Amino acid sequence: MQKWTVQSNATNKILHSPPSWFERLDWAALFPKRQPVEVDLGCGDGSLLLHWAKRFPDRNWLGVERLKGRVLKLERKAPRLGIAGNLRALRIESGYAVEWLFPPASVTAFHIYFPDPWPKKRHHKYRLVQPAFVTVLARALEPGGFVNLATDHGDYFAEMLACFGANASFERVEPLVPATPEEMTDFERDFATEGRPINRARFRKVRS
Ligand SMILES: C[S@@+](CC[C@H](N)C(=O)[O-])C[C@H]1O[C@@H](n2cnc3c(N)ncnc32)[C@H](O)[C@@H]1O
Image (spheres, rainbow, N blue to C red):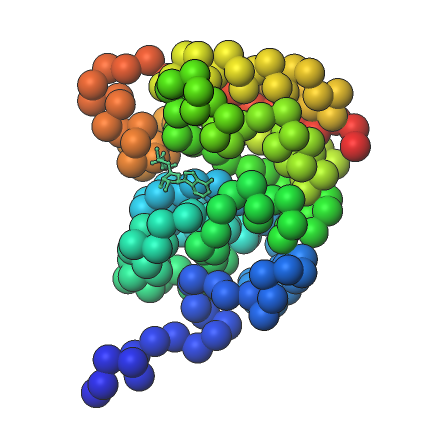
C-alpha cells in the first residue's frame, strides 16, 4: 500500500485546514458532534490534549500550535489511542486564531499552559497574554466560560493576573490543579521533576 493512501478522510483528519483563513470557523465542519469546545493554546506535542480527548469524549478538543512538527506528532498519536472525532488541531498563531477564527461566544474553556515567557523586558511585547488578548478571549468565550493559566515564570504570572484583573469580563476562581502526571503538560512534568514552583490561575467570564 502506498503511504498516502493511509491517511484518514477529511472528517477524521486531526490537523484541520479551513476552507478560508479569513473567515470564522464553523465548529460543525471540524467536529462531527455538537458538544462543548475546549481549546489548548500553544499545545506543544499535545500529550495533555490526547489525555483529555480520550477521557472526556463528550467534549470537543482543539489544539492550536504554530510549530508544524508538534501538531503532526499529535496527528500521529491520536489514532493509536482510538481518538478521532473529538480532537482537532490548527497550525496557526494563537492570537490570530482567537481574534479572527473562533466564532464569538462559542468556546467553553481556554487552556494556556506555559506560554513562552519572553523574559527580556524588550521582548515582553511578544507575550501572548496582554490586555488586548484578554479582551478577545472574553469575546470568544461562552457566558460562564473559563480561561485556565499555568506558568513557572513569576513575572509573567503577575502580568497575567494584572491583565485579567483589569478586565471586567472576568472573575478569578479556584484554579485547576493536576491530580496525576497524565493531567500535566509535557513542560509541567519537566518542571515538576526539577521542583520548580508552578503558578496557576483560572478566570470565569461573568459578563460580556
Ligand atoms: C513552552 S511551550 C509549552 C507547550 C505546552 N503548553 C506544555 O505546557 O507542554 C510553548 C508552546 O507554545 C507554542 N507557541 C508559542 N507562541 C505561540 C503562538 N503565538 N501561537 C501558537 N503557538 C505558540 C510553541 O511553539 C510551543 O509549542
